Amino acid sequence: MKFFALIASAVGLLLPTAAAAQMAQPPVVQTRTTHIVEFDLPAPADASPGAMIVDSQGQDNNRIWFVTRLGLQRVIKLEPTKSLMKGSAKWTSWTLSPPLPPASTGGLKRIRGSSDRRFIFVRTSDNIQRIDTQACNATGCQRTVWEDQVGSLNVSDLAVDNRNNVFTAGADDPTQPNTSYIQRLTPGPFVSDGVLGVMATVTRWTVGGGAGFCVDLGRTITSFPCLSGVAVHPYNSNLIYYAEPQGDDGFGNIGELNISTTPATTRRWHLSQVPTPDPQGGPVQQPRQLIIDSWGIIWVNTGSGHLVSLDPNTNKMRAHTIPLAAFSDPFGIAPDDDVVGYSDSGNNKVGMVFPKGGLTFVAPVRCLSSNPVPPGCPNPTFPQKPVLFERAAIDSGAVPPNGKVVTATVTDKQDGVFVEAQLDSGNDDASPLGITPVKSKSQGTFFYAVGATTNPTIDRVGFVRLPMPQRVKHPRDDDDTDDGCCSPIQPIGWHNSELGDDDDDGLGNEVDTPTANEKATIGDPAPLGPGQSVDYPVTASPTTLALIAMATADNVLGQITVEIYDALGVLVAGSLTAPGTATSTLVLPATGSYTVRVKNYGMTSITHTPTIVVREPWLP
Image 1 (cartoon, rainbow, N blue to C red):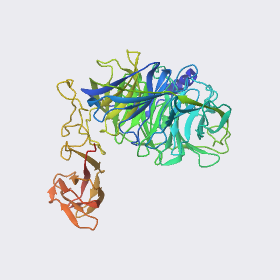
Image 2: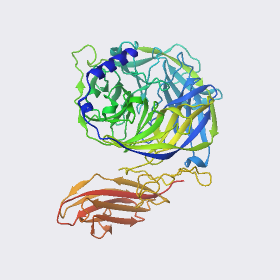
Image 3: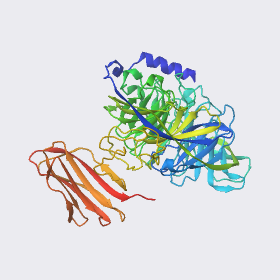
Image 4: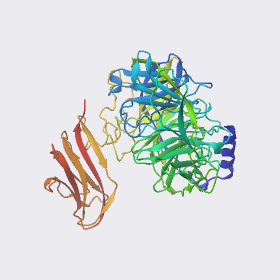
């Protein structure tokens, strides 16, 4: 793959972006501490936890799925206690079919698309494997192996739609990037242990651009191979998004394959058209792992040390430069509601960014049916691949949590606020790889895989609670900011807190109580003329303890009220007209739909920001 690297580097030198010539404001950097909780699983014959399922849709909550990368590799499920430091975490492992040299396992990304996580799909350098975690006997669980590609050091990520179709990227000849394809595998049933001679038909669309492969600038060591991204749109399974690390200009593209027609159609967004937000980071190039967040925004990390977003509906893109990007080696990306997590193997960091900065319109390049080669519109081909039916050995156990304190930095610059934990500060972690948000806890919490430690007998994964230097629009209440750790064993510096947010979960003290679960929705600022009002819907469940509605005005003298009406239009709670801010609370509301009404009683226009909180009891 050095051929790709040379092209990418040469183009990057010849065609610097216009933004690279601009003078950037120096970043503001604060040094903090943050706490992590790590779990050391026994590693009988494998090593180096790698890719994780990225739980961008909230299907795992407090559960982790990951694969190991070296030796006799395994799929592992880890289930920590709800309050991490209060008990041991349970783990279950399933062995993978032994790989061919070189021993390397690719991305475990997404499973079935349902909350039961019955089927585990894994992409390796030689095949796709499926483990049925519920069809087991004394010798293990059903494992199906599709030998679908020629062995390669490069391994694409994989995606699974809601019908269990498995999408991957690759090429029969890695030296020919124009032969790269997107593949769909429709898995059949498990036949019987050891049956031979069964063939499966896969569907391939040739897209080119080096899809499925890594372009390396010489930084990747422990993290290689990177996760070359592929993802299915969560709301339209005919749209497949993928990374083209080389593209047609050396910088790389984000591609979209629409398989609803024959030939299929493609769109490509060139990273070379995305301005570099920080000249120290160099041009944006070499897209890697690609994840779609809950809003339908495409996020990709890059070999150049950037996090890039794309809204395929508006064609607007934006890049954010990781601090010390020139020394970075991004592996995983993990979008949450308002922040985006990432792992930086080169700098031994896990972090997140609060995105900011202007968006750039990038017109996509569409395929041409008249062009017989990429970027022509691809016709599908249907090669057949052999299938093996085996058993995956099962093991299980429990491991205690290890609480630690590490250095953290908060870097505020023009393209975002970056919060990073330095995992090797007083700790033996190196090369963090997979990362996923923890949907059962507040934003700013992530599980991560540790690619290397000083102890070869363990597989280590961890949890980090990063500081929250600013409020978020979709906070998740988390009254357990110490994660079960308490005096006298509490390490010095364990507790994080921000001004007005004692438990550091992004939800202000004014509505956050330590005994209930507050679910908040913060609206966008919106204009409100004199005498005008605007309505917002809210629903109370049978267990709702209170509805809290707030509104703040950009003018501290603005006269506003907040009222709550039931489904019949009867006023059930209201505030007095107040300057600048108003709050209304309905305690123990009846189950049903309600309307929150914000009204401007002043003589001038204001811009208001609504906040609606539904207070529920914590579930056991």
